[in-house]
Image 1 (cartoon, rainbow, N blue to C red):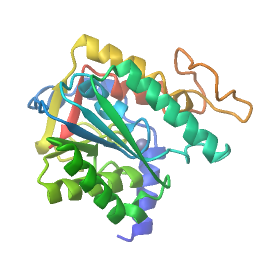
Image 2: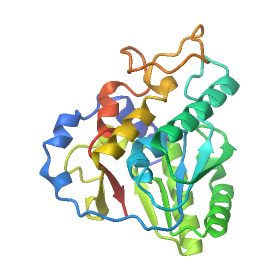
Image 3: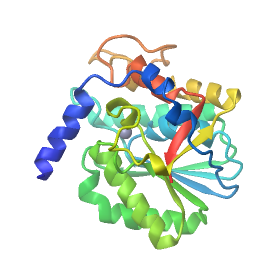
Length: 261
Ligand SMILES: [Zn+2]
């Protein structure tokens, strides 16, 4: 298949109606996944856009006993093409900082790499080098990155770069899905279920994650040209044209998270 066809297939998969969370909740396959424990040392968590890391791994991050090094690959400035990219980038960086505040990580540092949004694939080699440096300098015991089969080009490229950097530095690497819960279905043969593991979230970690997700106002409420970008976050997702509607968020507010190891 050509790359163009793959991109079109991926775009169609994400534009199509998603798998309802009730279908995932009813599937015994998820409940049966083996549980995995994160290490006690430093962990590097990679996100393609500022919110991926909280959606996919936020509840586990809140429980990590060691330092967390967050690498935000792009500024997510492409999420609202009708609004100025610089304002969106600043807004999303501020949302992430507030979200990390809600997660109340014991010790964390954020690295913003400013790779162009929607173009991570073109910067994969450079990104691999940068991630290798971060993994070495932090003495990371684990790298956590987007799923390389997420059917979102930036997520896949960031995941591949992280996997390559982890191989170079001898660091274990886990991958968290974000859009997979939308386009896949229980038992989906496109998903490597044999490497999937569960990370249970105690109620307090789940609550922190839910509070953190509510900070991503630009993704969970409609943003129009006259939206006051500096306004305080809305308390709940509003219906309408939003990037992460409630049906999508439902996949990310379960009492556990899932990674591929
Ligand atoms: Zn993303």
